[in-house]
Length: 249
Ligand code: PXP
Image 1 (cartoon, helix red, strand yellow):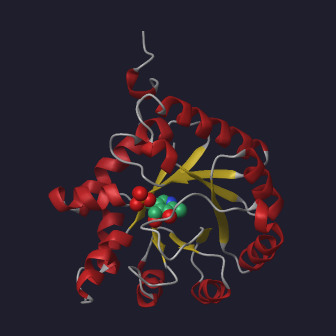
Image 2 (cartoon, rainbow, N blue to C red):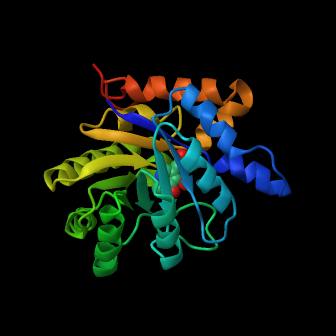
């Protein structure tokens, strides 16, 4: 059964729209935990467009589940992670102009640098996960990096047309199988919604889904605690029949 990491970056987005003090993502992390979040995820971006350094510091003190810090593989972020010591670091690619993380990390293309960073973080007792596309060459590089986890990028699956979605789901299923046979543990995330999450949650060996935007969007209608509760029910008990029932007899 997969667990649920709740990404609260979009709470901070609302605050930063006015550069004020509300809503405070630190308080909302508590509500997410009350709704059943198994972990809280934040992305501290180089440009600080949503989550701020102060948020990460306070979350380290207040989160009672697990704190997962998404960050770019830079010297600045490494120093912050080693000081704050989240439970997990998820290394992601980062581009200034992007609206959100686009595509997975090119682990194969920067293997030596990532090996070093992963080793230093793990030596400090921080788990390391690499956010990658479900591509066999990238997964092999992840195993070679020494990282224990991968987070499979589900954005292409989430954006696919309904005709394409079964093929994208198959790619994620195969990616999870390959990763596990390489000794890696498997998380997934990006673009998952209440409508498309169940087939991904049902993939064999899936440990954790990291989900943000759709939960914060629903929270506007039903409150964050309830929105997390509703997502957790889908993640924990996904329909087992194939994608949207399309192949059931
Ligand atoms: N996982 C990673 C690595 C991400 O970068 C993001 C977006 O910040 C998410 C999960 C959550 O994506 P979404 O907000 O689309 O649920």
